[in-house]
Image (cartoon, rainbow, N blue to C red; front, side):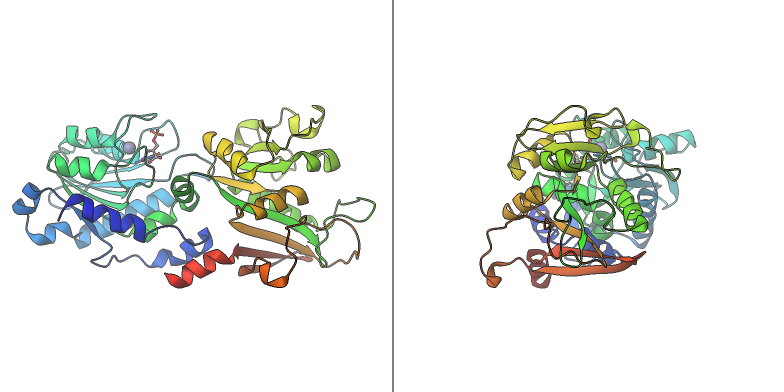
Length: 405
Ligand code: AOF
Ligand code: ZN
């Protein structure tokens, strides 16, 4: 099979078209069909190996499951790099090394697996590497894994997800060109599910945006006199902390800083803010000058000032700062700007059993004058959080794509 024709269909076919929830739900769908497997081999390799060398063996599939499980448990959210797991198999099919990637700046999973085998006195020459992500082919914070694999004499590489990062991609073809037997796309959905936000960000060249809102039954976030504290209860506020912990940026507009003076920090179980290095980045967007005495500019976490009103520009700057998942926390003007730009990917709404009848709405004017123009959302999850309700929703363009899948 020609390398290029083998690569492109899989990339197009596995485009992330769902909110990450749906990706996670599909995690069980792991045995690859013939079409999902991406066999990359040179003409030389193709003539050397029987046709079934382009398919993963049961041992390799079991090793891929183990690599994915290792990656899943490897670390917390909020690293610009993906979770990756790797297992090295001897020619006889024995596990001789295991490795996971521990975050930006540390060695890649492939290099860890080779080092693990060496530590245990196993020769790597002639071995098979099973890894959840296509080995990289770039000089980033560390050297290319392709070079490490070739240097170690690995003979066969079985990988899950083709690398959606254009900077690092190309490893499969480079390995095949060097005479390594390469099989890709193995348990690809499980591999993608390890890094839904990273995958989204690499493909779309911007972070995934979750819009969080908290309001009354009639969709208001503040009363007519602007009082807005304690609409939702303590459990819902604790749940927002959990949500913040999953994102790498908490984004608000200048209006929210002036109106509410939020700290936007993550707190530990004792109510004290976590150390600054463990905090998500805070970002304040908008052109208005704001007083440096606001809490958002304190020492408890880093804060980025985005001097723009354009959501796309803000996301470009956040992507440049290596953000993969932004939590949009208000206020109504900013939320409306993101909706108008089509840049909301998920909604988490906390609805309090309370009615105001007047006061600010959770979202500003979207320019919608007739019902047919209103965005429809697909409900993904409903949960009772203390006295409040949490709705998790995806814009319906996702639902339409999902149906077309
Ligand atoms: C990882 N871990 O185990 C593999 C990765 O510049 P770097 O060195 O931080 O490389 C990051 C890119 O390398 C990442 O976006 C992905 O495309 C590729 N492969 N990355 O962080 C790994 N195998
Ligand atoms: Zn690498």
